[in-house]
Length: 82
Image 1 (cartoon, rainbow, N blue to C red):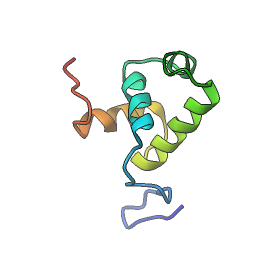
Image 2: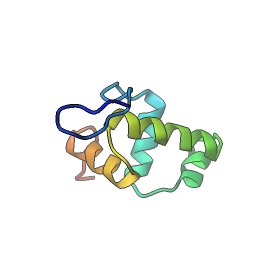
Image 3: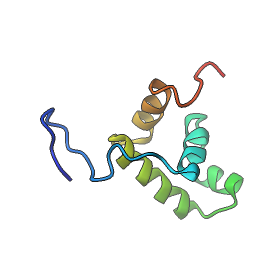
Image 4: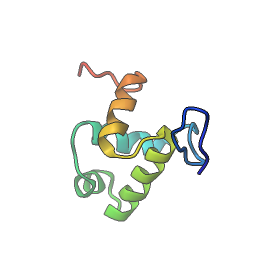
């Protein structure tokens, strides 16, 4: 983890694009679903969803799901008006 000039630590994956699966997970996360619910929808394990969420947090440079959802909406990746 490096610390840029703004003083906020960043994971080495910060700024990398999200994978298609991470984007799918974010779509459900923004809707307020939990890992277990997302796993059921995607047909995968809850641990796999947790791994995707961890990757998303690192790539977006945030510390929790709420921050990730806000960053996702702010970036215009998801139409927040749905």
